[in-house]
Image 1 (cartoon, rainbow, N blue to C red):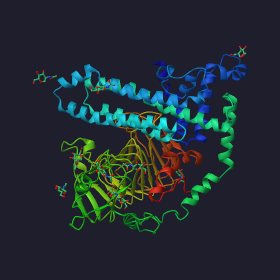
Image 2 (image 1 turned 45 degrees about the vertical axis):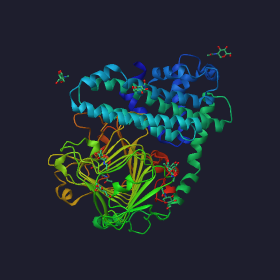
Image 3 (image 1 turned 60 degrees about the vertical axis):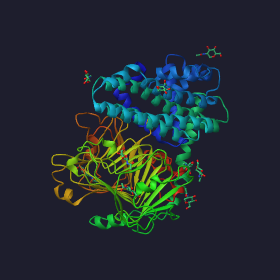
Image 4 (image 1 turned 135 degrees about the vertical axis):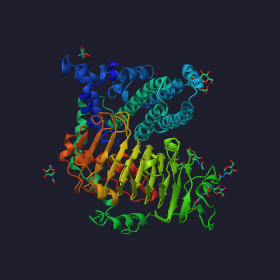
Length: 612
Ligand SMILES: *[C@@H]1O[C@H](CO)[C@@H](O)[C@H](O)[C@H]1NC(C)=O
Ligand SMILES: *[C@@H]1O[C@H](CO)[C@@H](O)[C@H](O)[C@H]1NC(C)=O
Ligand SMILES: *[C@@H]1O[C@H](CO)[C@@H](O)[C@H](O)[C@H]1NC(C)=O
Ligand SMILES: *[C@@H]1O[C@H](CO)[C@@H](O)[C@H](O)[C@H]1NC(C)=O
Ligand SMILES: *[C@@H]1O[C@H](CO)[C@@H](O)[C@H](O)[C@H]1NC(C)=O
Ligand SMILES: *[C@@H]1O[C@H](CO)[C@@H](O)[C@H](O)[C@H]1NC(C)=O
Ligand SMILES: *[C@@H]1O[C@H](CO)[C@@H](O)[C@H](O)[C@H]1NC(C)=O
Ligand SMILES: *[C@@H]1O[C@H](CO)[C@@H](O)[C@H](O)[C@H]1NC(C)=O
Ligand SMILES: *[C@@H]1O[C@H](CO)[C@@H](O)[C@H](O)[C@H]1NC(C)=O
């Protein structure tokens, strides 16, 4: 499809502007985004006509559908999706709801249609491969998640339009793309996988378009507020953008407000050669006294190994939880080692698990791929319930390096928070699978790809503890799995320290340690205001095994310190960018995961903006 294929070079360029366009709040960045999208579109469309004339005529000649489809990557598909719904004559800004609803409905329709193909179902039925049947079962679960996301997105559009909740809609639709892709990956290579892949490709295109269409709709709504109903032309779009641009530069209100929120926080007292102290402080949560949960936690039930609570294990407490509770349900996990697989299911929203400290209240397990458990089922703690929160807990998988992938934690929950936790494992410790996640003052350890997945996750004031990998293997901190340029996902390490565990420190001359490698094509990892110790390889990033996929990935760094933070040798890696402050701000808690709306209210300390 010609409308869907763009040159690699063009893509690289667009990647940068797309990033800004996607991660920004619904004001400044969107507005600039809409200009980039529409202006570019009209320039190419009308290049051979008299420019002045066509500019003047734009509001009458532009077709509404084209306006909404301008920023999408699959335009022909987009036009097909919107053609029947939108009216040419009507003002586009009156049709942002309709466009979003049509785009999201198309996602739902495509998902349902594809998977019901009789040829596919017959092939699966006839297959003797148990892997195929397991894959089908797991895939169906993910498609249920997709359906739920489509439903909540449509409900939101109906109730609130696209202006306010654009970031929610985009987060959910990004997850739909994640799940579609995982679904394909689950099947063993063969005809069935090929057919699923074909179905899911089409669904991905439509989902990708939906994210872009919502972006455009939100931008139009925002513009409307500024322009007070003036009709839309390239000129007033540009003027509005310029005005807003000026505003951010000359008006530091935004910054001041952010700084006020967390004035008590200074640069952590992390100094070289005091790693032990640092780790202890982060684990106990009593370092400098400011990293305590605010507001206190009152348990609804208590789990205690010694029988002094309501339950002797965590699963017992979850099983007994009232189905229709409203508000937060707080489970206190008293000191002890809990050897059980804990599942916070889809239906369990707003749960808080809190312990006596990451070294005292520990959930442990050792499920692993080498023993025949499917990767995502190996997690010691699996979180699928939205707004989950864990405080002062240890979460570990003790399978060891020889057992391949063995997750300590898997998180597929929107607005999940981990505070003062310790997450320990080796290969693939933390699967940050999808949606928006915030990790604060946590220690996360592992060897290779040990923070992976396709979530939009921020790790703030955390310690990333890199352990020695198997001989001959590299150590890699993150493997982000973004599959589509429109997805609003990525990993952000903010004011975080990347340190080597003792054994690695001793052998670091023979082991190469990288900050990231691209699990999927459009992988994103950003490191802001962090400390990168000297054991990290100067190039910082490596391609995925057997692939040359750094070029489509986005790896950015801003204001890092430490012996491993020199970016000179990084420059030769495709996909690497030194960010300026303005770009870096797009990856803050406030802008990247819309954190102001959901983190402070939980009492978790948070820095919404940059520290510097
Ligand atoms: C602009 O509009 C005028 C009158 O409305 C028309 O005569 C002219 O052909 C239009 N020009 C273009 C480039 O569409
Ligand atoms: C797919 O098949 C299921 C079960 O047969 C059915 O409930 C569902 O409505 C079908 N979906 C579509 C979009 O046809
Ligand atoms: C599956 O097994 C049945 C009976 O064991 C056999 O007749 C059939 O050919 C097998 N199908 C495939 C695709 O191997
Ligand atoms: C929960 O639902 C059950 C039955 O559906 C009802 O009897 C009970 O009162 C409800 N509890 C609360 C707290 O709403
Ligand atoms: C949990 O505890 C809070 C207060 O601590 C209370 O308001 C809420 O009703 C409790 N929920 C349940 C389901 O018991
Ligand atoms: C969870 O909390 C959110 C926000 O406080 C609320 O809108 C939602 O209804 C809650 N869900 C449950 C199941 O309590
Ligand atoms: C949890 O405790 C219950 C009894 O309260 C017991 O039946 C169950 O087997 C325990 N589960 C685990 C995983 O230890
Ligand atoms: C938790 O989920 C895993 C993986 O799906 C499953 O094997 C296990 O039985 C579940 N545990 C409980 C207590 O439900
Ligand atoms: C970074 O590395 C380059 C090349 O090794 C070196 O020339 C430069 O001085 C270093 N910069 C800093 C700030 O250490």
